[in-house]
Length: 466
Image (cartoon, rainbow, N blue to C red; front, side, top):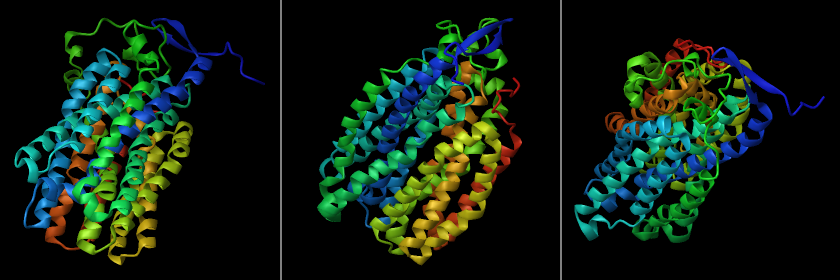
């Protein structure tokens, strides 16, 4: 029998029921999820372009040295610099998102990323501008990091807080596809460019093309994001709406006293009230961050330069692996709405611990098929761990701190587990010339994630007590 348009979900708020028109949510949620996905894809396209360019060309162009390893290490330092500035983005955009609205924060973060990325494509190299070139590169890279600090949490929340009942993990996982999709999009631009102009032409001038194309993508993203509605949870929390969804925490409800002045600075309130959730949430995501960045950033440089694997082989393996992860992301999220977040994340983390060494050991074979298969399995295990993570981190925190809380946990994990991973891996391989060390390093961080997820409760039903 068809569901009646009048059917609602109710939640007792302030002593009385508040109606949640499920039909309205079902009609708006897909548009919001797609808008969030477009934004995260563009942001991570910009980030992936920089990561790939760091591995291929930015070292000698901006940090010339007689030692190729030193130049590459310097380029990866600028890659890591953006992760250092991400916490500033959490503070800035988390405050905007928790006080002024999710949508405003997301529009501002996307605009900042676009300006910084196009700016990189216009920079003079060291040969032209001397020391000014790397200074400008690092400055723009820091701005990229600030932008990323506010992107993931806001995109996930906008989708999750519009989601109809029982589908929060599914809708939250849609923008979570953005990182892998952004990498695929960057590869779709970089690989043909390399084939057309050759390595010499790409190193000389064509490396700028992927950065400059970002301007078109950002304009599309800004148009999409300005057309979606603000989160109903945020409107209800700030008095701009009358609905509070079933997954809101007890302390989110309008009947409680007005927030204290401390809540005007959400990060301070978060650290004071929920340090355990923040710490464990960060640990839960740290292993997956290492898998992602070592696979799609570091190995693109390590494989060709150290092991003699063709560049296109590494790009193809990483791209197919990313596509495999994307393929299972939404089915895994839908399953997480049925059985819970923890079982799937625990399975993914366990698999990542066990598969880390075999995955990177495949590089020693220099066999394209074997490397591609190993990467596909590894990035599918990552999807198993990360697909429910979007809803899980959001559900750990109350609505007035949710943007800051989810962003802080994810960004800290990305910084510690991902941002410094290429630097740590470069040092490890300078001491032990074997890809096995990458597996032991990544597997250790995935073991940390396994322990942290095990220490946290299930959040699917929104019963995580305050």
